[in-house]
Image: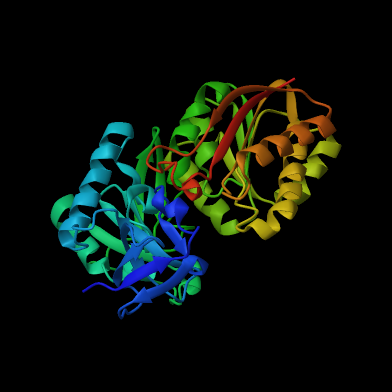
Length: 391
């Protein structure tokens, strides 16, 4: 018989309304025995059933909801049903040659990330409860989704908050972990073993495509280019010249190889710079571009560092705006959940004011639909993406 957890009076209301997490300070007690990672039943203070969750008392997020149906068993059939539902959704909304196949809580499989690169899959397990089902997930990918190879990239610090070790490695027979993909007509070699996250940032797929018209015949600057994705999209769109910057020489080398892969070496080139150092210098030198793109890493991953992150975003946006020719275009984004849309909006507005330039908004976008935003879980909404004309 499943262990039962009971919540304090006044707690768990978000969970009752569909949020997938319950924190340890919301739990009044439990009835029965459990081992961390087990499936348990969750009840409110009135003894009304909320759902079934997996438990980990080593984590601040002690319970993660798996189902609201008391009769539904968490077994192989459960995972098969959820994974097929996720796949059917993606076939409707996005090019699935390479995409995020499972987006954790937003696909009702909390703690599980699966990215698909052609016929190769990368799994990231962020919670103990999911680790227990990893063999089932691998079996389903092989049997139902024709996996040519599966690799684990659970080498993330958040696992340590769950009392787990970081880990990575093959979950199938070994294969060449440099996988070539095509997105928006651009070829990339994705290093799923050593690249950032699972090897590539799939969440900007549609946003990268949205810049094509603006970049035709333009001189483009792409800051924080990583492996060159925005820069290469500008190149295939017919840009006159593209310069991509990244602080990592390894990223610059990989981006340069991707440029050659697309036959763009004469147009799209990359240099290793710290944007915070070089952009102010170029402003002083009077350099100008038709299009400036800022796609920085998350400057904050917690509420406690939001203020310092906002200062960082303002600084880099101020310099970026100053580098745009009058009438040119400025593309800027934030991938931090804690940099909420209102704060990001205000930060950009302050930067434009200090730059003595006027912004005319063309588009506001978020993450691609294979990273769906679940309104019951605001943590699933993280990417903010603006396109402006700079007057």
